[in-house]
Length: 212
Image (cartoon, rainbow, N blue to C red; front, side, top):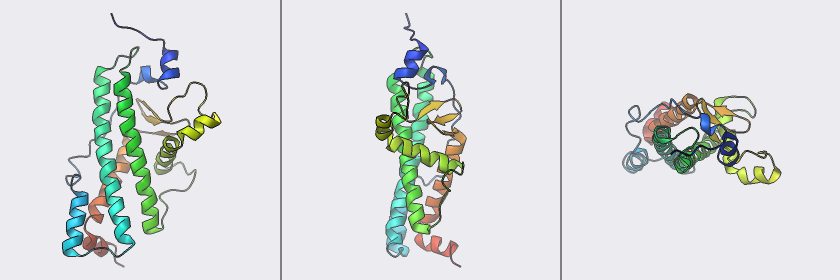
């Protein structure tokens, strides 16, 4: 006999709309970026053999590539965990451990991506978004901040009585108290980050592409 739980209990103690989360379309980028396992290694070899960036660009570039590789790995592990969860869960009796394993990996992906955005600003002096501009970059960055500062938000009572997590999964994407980022939108952000790593892994080539 399958135990069925009250929807209000599920939303109060686990996550909003968890009983309604039953599908997701999340892009797979692994075949598009076939060097994703080797960005850091390639950068080290190219820097050693062909010429490296000068400081502080050298440190920024390495950390940017590391964060892209980490976010890319998180993204696809989270994607696989999401589909596994959707295969085994039951709406009125969700697979709680699988859900939070999945959510944890997505949170790591958002945080690594946000660190990359901070490094990019230091490298280029260019902002990826303006505060409150509604862009996907702004919304994803604010979701990462909600994850990072969830303890402070709980202390201030910002989450409300029923909200136990700073970000949760629904059929249309990632939700926080204020923002939504679709799976396609976040996949596009990871794809842009991957393009950046592809370019940055070869210092000599990157300088040539960006030469005036």
